[in-house]
Amino acid sequence: MTKVTCDSGVSLDGFSAGPDQTRENPLGKGGERMHRWMFEQPEANKAEREAIVQAGAFIMGRHMFCPDRGEWDLDWHGWWGADPPYHAPVFVLGHREREPLEMEGGTTFHFVTDGIEAAMERAKEAAGDRTVSIAGGASTVQQYLRAGLIDELRLHIAPVILGSGERLLDGVGDLKLEQLKVTSSELVTHITYRVG
Amino acid sequence: MTKVTCDSGVSLDGFSAGPDQTRENPLGKGGERMHRWMFEQPEANKAEREAIVQAGAFIMGRHMFCPDRGEWDLDWHGWWGADPPYHAPVFVLGHREREPLEMEGGTTFHFVTDGIEAAMERAKEAAGDRTVSIAGGASTVQQYLRAGLIDELRLHIAPVILGSGERLLDGVGDLKLEQLKVTSSELVTHITYRVG
Image 1 (cartoon, rainbow over the protein chains, first blue to last red):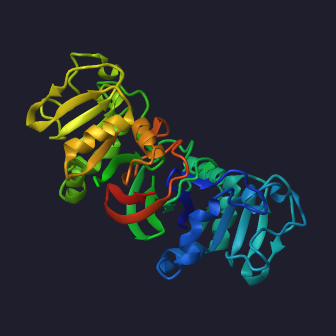
Image 2 (image 1 turned 180 degrees about the vertical axis):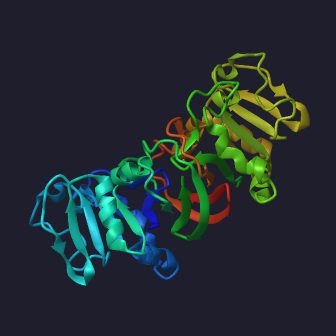
Image 3 (image 1 turned 90 degrees about the horizontal axis):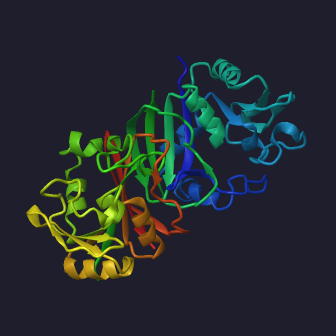
């Protein structure tokens, strides 16, 4: 059975993005401070960084793809540059049919309009014997948690208070969580939970 | 200088107590699940348990002392039994003058009506060269964080989703946090932050 994981950065007060997300600032105001560990301590967090992108397929919400317009802006190719870090198929949950968008390095964005379960089926098929990763944002994570479709939640808790923005774990129901693994460097605590 | 610490249990979604706190259920609905690590894995979490109660004086809010009536119920002696776990002076922030309440084992509840800074002064004097600990609840922690009066925040993050209740870190402003230490057992992740 394909394992489904979800990695998310989160502030100590529970936000996965700050307020005022735009395509210029997709993490919202202050949100980039949550990810300092990735860029400033890459070696100390090597295993966790590699685990995030080793999935065989990804699923993301339309506003993670384009914060202010979703999949509707056909000129928009994502905010990751020509060679996004996924190097695998990425299924974008949307409302509008759109041709797949092939990027450099093996990333292809596929736009899925028939719901989260259909997207999961397609992602599992694409992933083969590798994992499927829910890439965000918060509302996508919440939908998959509520549907019981995530096996492992891996949070990367930064020593940052955002004060407002998108709360990662609102409205997810009464999840049963088992804490599997804790690691840390100075800028982050990584915790892996088994869900359900 | 006296160090001021704050220990708080917190659910993964950021609540330090569940909804519907009463004197019969002071942690609110489901709140006791956050503290399983203390009772079910006392040995694995020995150092953290001891650190919580080793302060020379404590400060708590009136609703932590008595959730539904604060310090107004003169027949109420707290919900910790005859020998509360503090074994030190506990300063309760309140609105009403009340005689000190001496319990067994060295715990005395003092009722302070002239604000958080006055309570801090009295606690520091009582603590001598030991630490002062902010014991909760959430609004008391928030007031002291906003006032810049806490040096060390020690969170005990449980693999539990409460969904509602009292959020620990709402409205605390833009705290500067430095992650000092991370430890864990299966039922909890302990993280210590230096504040400011």
